[in-house]
Amino acid sequence: MSFTQPASVTLHAGCKINLHLEITGVRENGYHELDTLFFPLPSPFDTITISKGATGSGLLLECPALSIPPEKNIIYKSWKKYSDATGWKPDLAITVEKGIPDGAGLGGGSSDAAIILNYLNKYCPNNALSPERLNTLAASIGADVPFFLNNVPAHATGIGDILEPSTISLSGYSLVLICPDISISTPWAFAEWDKTMRSTSASNNKKEILTTTPSKDRKHSSRALWLFNSFEVVVYSAFPKLRAYKEKLMSFGAEGAVMSGSGSSIFALYRETEQAARAATALEAEGVATYLHHL
Image 1 (cartoon, rainbow, N blue to C red):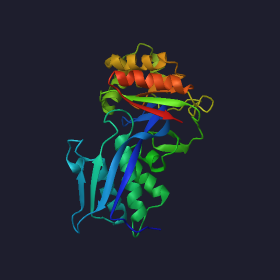
Image 2 (cartoon, rainbow, N blue to C red; image 1 turned 120 degrees about the vertical axis):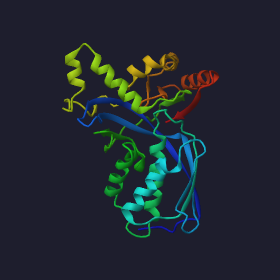
Image 3 (cartoon, one colour; image 1 turned 30 degrees about the horizontal axis):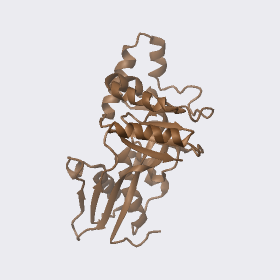
Image 4 (tube, rainbow, N blue to C red; image 1 turned 90 degrees about the vertical axis):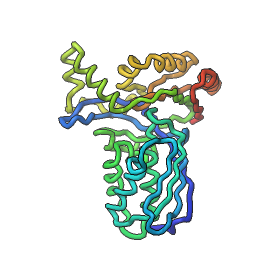
């Protein structure tokens, strides 16, 4: 069922954190097997304004914060793949105001893509995609995109595209998310992790980590708040300032702190609101972009 397409609409694309992220193997094609728990957050967010375009204009995309050609943008890719799949190629003018930092491990691009796909599927006059087909299309755009289609906590395996809803609740916690002014390339982080695993002298450990054979426990159902990130070992070696930020967050009494995605953002969980507020104030005083959430 389609809805009447509005002349203009402004939407907020929120971000995600990874409560845990474990690289469990490497496929023959080089893609990495993951076991991760996605958790959505409302901020930081990107602001996306979608307006009807002039007839025949196609997609006019404006994103001043990213110095790349519009056709290289994940939003353009989403619009193009959706139109190829359904035959509906709406004329749109889209403006993106970035609030989610690039290279922070918060899934900003994937979140934008999901916003566009959901918009297109909502207003598609004919041939709107089923949830299953939309999910498949989303996965072809980016591994994190399917998660953002529903934007609820989810356990992910495969390359991050096999999703199961999670009942995890962080109710009662306060969460401090920091976004240092450091951009980390995800391909670089994977390459460094591969290099580290290949160079380790513990051959048995290497065989266990670089295998596609699943271990006995990959859902971590008994340790839902197991805060862990396989990328930390390589990212903190290259960016020791990030390790110092994590230690500072812990010093204010956090239950735990961990990097999200391939970095550079870090979050910490606090049982006491006052502790979280003090931590947020301290990091803000150092000039670090900080977001305080009461969950």
